[in-house]
Length: 223
Image (tube, rainbow, N blue to C red; front, side):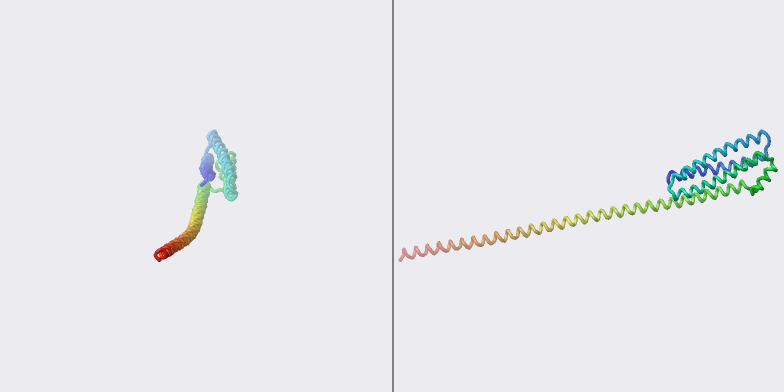
C-alpha cells in the first residue's frame, strides 16, 4: 500500500469516528433544553467543521493518485459528503425543534429511531469494502512487483547467456587461430625436413665424389 492510500484510509477512519460521534451528540441533544442544549449543539458545530476538513483532505488525497484509483476514492468522498450533508440537516432540525418535533422531522427525512446504529453499520460496511479494496490493491502491487522481479531475472539470465556466447565465440576464434599456427608450423617443419634431406643428398654426393676421386688416384699410383 502506498503512502497516499494509507493517508486516505487514516482520514476515512477519522471521518467515520467523527460522523458517529456527531450523530450520537445530535441524538443526545434532542432530550436537552436551554443552555445545555445550546452548548451540546455548539460542540456538534465544531465537530461538523472538523468532519468537513477531513473530507477536504480525503478529496485532495483522492485527486493525487492514479486516475483509475482516483475515481474509486472520489466516489467514496461523494458518499461521505452526502453523509455529512445529512448530519448538517439533522443538526438544523435539532436546533429548531423540541424532542417530539425533532422525531417528526426525522420521520419526514425517512430516518428511524435506529438511524445512528444503521448509519454506523453502513460506515462499517464502507470501511470493510475499503479494506478489501486495499487488500486487492496490495495483491495487485505484489503481482506487479513479482512480474518486475521475474523480468529482471530473465534479463539477467539472457545477459549471462549472451556473455557466455561471446566467450565461446572468442574461444572458438582462439582455437581457429591456434589451428592456423599449427598448420604454419607444420609447413615450416616440412620445408625444413626437405631441406635437410636435400643437404644430406648433397653431402652424400660430395662424399661419393671424393671417394671415387681417391680410388682413382690410388689406382693410377699403384698401376
